[in-house]
Length: 433
Image 1: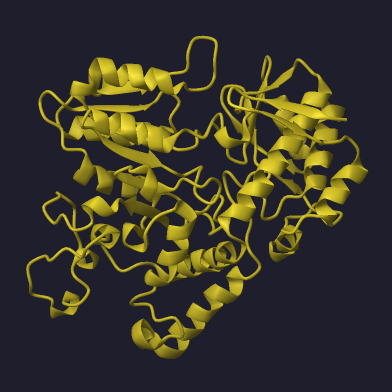
Image 2: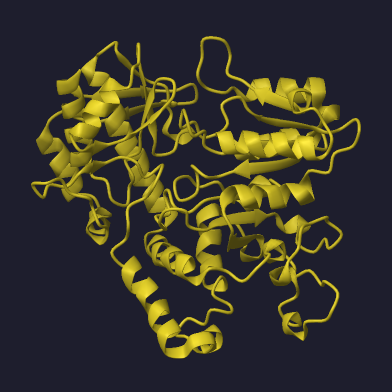
């Protein structure tokens, strides 16, 4: 059976088939299948693996993570404070061990990336530098369905600077009767109000629909009106290839506990474009770790901001969290984003095919059909939703997540989800429906 995948830009014929044998064959031919066994897969009471489709909320734990953290616990036990310099992985420069791998994942230069703090903290720190409103150019553009944390962050920034958040916040909305954003509508907003807009803060992958937006085009549109452009990559990092340096965006921030599998509440990361790397006049909230590393321990000197993204650091980092991140990044470095994206597109295409084969008007996929316009998440909209479908899936040990008012988010993650996972999930969905 053939599945015709049609988009505005291209038409692609894909030979997806129904049946468990097809799914098993795809897994046998999958060059990344080995990595599934490198993760702890939660199990039910009978010892069967859960069908885990919530890597978009919390990624599974790599089996190597425990050893990475244990190494630091051992060095702390055996060396005490000397671990900052004498540990196997010295703590003093530990964040530098993560930089190159993280830069590859987001398509950046090492000077543009640092792992620190949490996502919303980083967004606020970045807005201190890149949201510099005037009386006439002060408005901020976000997606109408931005993640709540982004909305609260920009609302409070507007309020902090003395502006009415209701007036200063501009929402880029889908057209009536549609779920997805259209770049032409952002262009219209900027044509009409660009002289009043100081900042665009847009999610690279929308958390609700899974839509992957054209980051480079957003940057071009914003910069044409002298706006700063920032990207929230919470649902994009480790999932898409954002090519941040080439996109030209001014800054970006992300968490690492979703697709980067670093553990609940783990540290985030940020990107500041190289064009800002040596601008010491940028306003910022600074701390000890913002200071030039060569003279940091001279202690009684005025602030000399270290170049690049590291200049936005405040304090020495929590090593145990960074050890978990290192465990994951070492795996990503081994696999490479090209291979992950290829499998991701295959998994979501297969998933989409099977759901469409159900031909059930109670559900609808609202994520873009074009694989290039989505990450590895499919958002299933439920007609007359009351959350009961999600509860029944959970009871069957199929772990998805629900987002109000009517969407079940499912993310077949290429590092640990299989074609058989997708097949069995849709079979159970069919049974429940």
